[in-house]
Length: 301
Image (cartoon, rainbow, N blue to C red; front, side, top):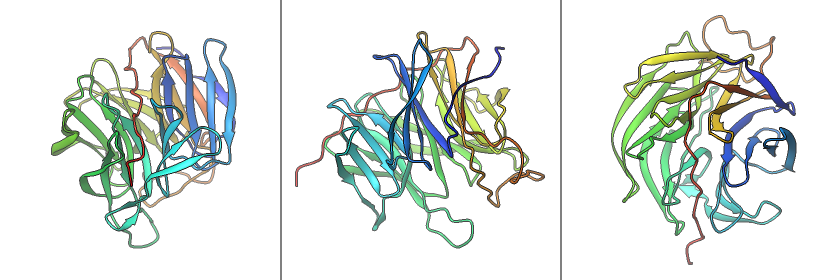
């Protein structure tokens, strides 16, 4: 196993959503608390802040140009500069407070809403998708803290993490209809471990999960059996992506601002230690998948 190296360090308050751009050979990720879009050029390994002062929880590049982004106010088209156009702002009568996302080969964007507040009673969120015409479809409901999403290589399975529930769910996914069925618990993470956060699915159909509070990424086989645990020198390990010329480099984001929650594992210290903030890179010679572009336009009024 290769060493885990810091490949960029902008002191991200909450680094998230790394996405490899195959066409242009760079990695993009966000600091969703610091309001930044960041980029790591390859093969120069040159990191840069692309945009500051922007609210993004998740994103995919959009085939017509620019990005489709999710944030606490909804799903938006963004030109990458100053222009934002709303696509979805409300789900089930509530503000579309959306988190992580993934796109399928048709260009649908799949995301989920979250209203988690550990200090008070809160509403449960919905798993949703947005079609190429901007139409909203509710796929499922009843989630505490929506997080990582990923599709199996043949797109027959959708994986979805609810961090506060300590669960990764799997669904049968119909790529033609963009529908899900047969929700089951793929993994229930022990209360002694970190929380399942961002995830990725490799080319072999194994599921990788970053463990917030857990200082690691873990790999599960398609049956949900833990087969590998890779330590990461950050207590708040947040997400991961495959990239590089052969999609065998693994990039891991982390969060430097401590975020204590009641679901922390026993003995976790939220006041000291290296919480994160850096982007890490490692090489395990396991290939990942190319991430799909969104393909969304605002539907006609």
